[in-house]
Image (cartoon, rainbow, N blue to C red; front, side, top):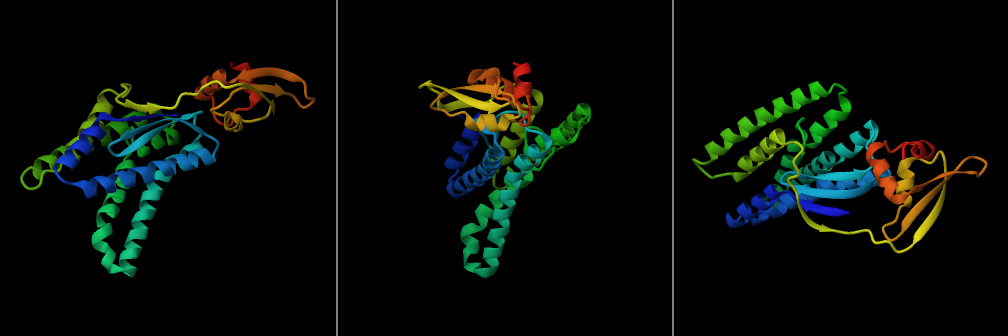
Length: 269
């Protein structure tokens, strides 16, 4: 799995550090980690393997082996926002039970609420925009909604940044506006920088016998980082139908849904 970082996240970190907002930076990192770990936990529980994580200013992008179906996409994409809102609810409840904690937890609650609200916006590459792509089948409608929300958000953020210049400058407004504008103008451009990657070394070759009805997500679970696997596909009578090697498996996972059975995968190699 590779971990990458968005350049704007570095800029955001440097600005917050130079302006002395250490606690705000820590709370933002906490909210982002909670958000993305929730995404990852739900994805893994549904049989998906993570291939790459890109950390961005207001969350991260998880790249999975295998294409999400509508049900899984709804669960995975909603998990991050749900986790942030649960933390906010927990914090507000804590204030009611122990008012003295308000001063220490307010910034964490604010960070989680902001991350949740931002990711609910129906514009790419935020969770709301990605979920919209699964809900609506009309790609033109998705693009119109996404672009309209992005333009409105960029305008509002720019105005808020200018207004903040007359009191306490808030660079978060500017960075978020730049982030949305960059993705809107260059949606296919890879903005991320690789931090580190864990390469899959070949130790030995395993032969795993699977049924022709075994779904892709279960096959992916059997793939281990320390081994190179060959999946022998058999029918009900135990006869060999074919073989799916691990390098072909990842290519198939990028095109097929997680529920695709092994027998069908053999035809699409």
